[in-house]
Length: 76
Image (cartoon, rainbow, N blue to C red; front, side, top):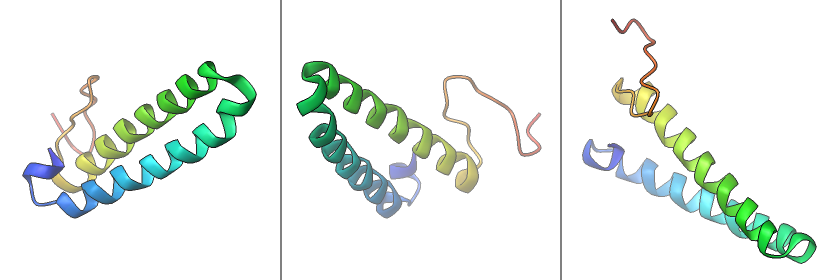
């Protein structure tokens, strides 16, 4: 949604930031937990990116793109 509404720069900054966090988490968790550490790092990163993109979309373009469809900000 952000990529189609003029927020491409914000979208790419969020993606790059979460990717760097994913690399850091992999470096920390894989030596200690192995494949489970890699899965945990990826899961944390995927959930984080969805939350960040959904929250930013709700704040800037007032569209709730989450699967829950929570109404806020004066929505009916």
